[in-house]
Amino acid sequence: MKKHMFAVLLLASTLNAGTAAAQPAQFNEIGVTMGHWHLISKDIEANRDLFLAMGGTLITRAGNDAVMFPGVVVNLALGDETADGGTQGTVVNHVGFIVDDVQLRIAEWRAAGVTVIPGGNNRLDQAYVETPDGVRIEILEDTTQPMPIRHEHVHLRTLESEVLKAQEWYARIFGGEKNMRNGSPVVNLPGVQMRFADDEVVQAPTRGHILDHIGFDVRDHQAFVERLEAEGITLDEPPRRSRSGGMITYITDPWGTRIEIVQRVPAAQ
Image (cartoon, rainbow, N blue to C red):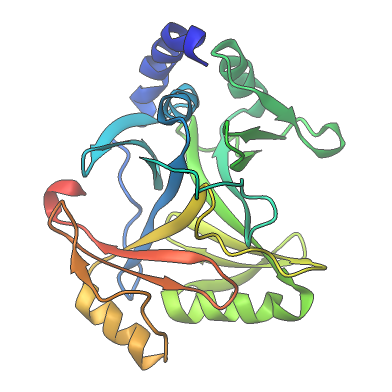
């Protein structure tokens, strides 16, 4: 990736016209929107360059590099030897972006040094990208969208008996809309579609893997924490102020997905 630095920055500068003004999606009725993925990177520079090549905008959060896309921010934090393993085999099997033209975008990304995996059954409207440390990203196509790339989904795998329970849980806890996509259950939330599929074995929790957690932004942290407690959900840690001055806490869903709950200060929006 390093030898493609100049190509990466040039490509990012052209694509960032569509992402520079990217902001989180509007809050839903209960004050929730998609916030971030949190990667514990072994090589922040390589991951940063990959996401810039894909059209993200470089920002800084709490002193760390992050890359913003419409609908999500990818937080990059330096990991240690305890953070290992990509997304496959964990409950968050992969995450997903949607682009305006898959073949056009992957040609640009390959020119910038990004390794792209072809879609299933040689589909031209699908592809995959993996970060250097194994975070799998599905790329799908929407030719009607006005921006080159935006966040689309987080795909969870559970036992078959748990799929509908997971759909119900995410809809209830985060105020999402239950629906179906290609015969599989989903929950629509601002900035993200949570997708659910079955697996024959229990998947590993996300905590301690490269994609350590996902994050939702909330309008009113105290009110949302009270909502969680009313649902009988135990916080992983007490609410506290972040280094940027906002409020954060963590929960873990019943299947092992670690989730950060964040209220950001206005300047960080």
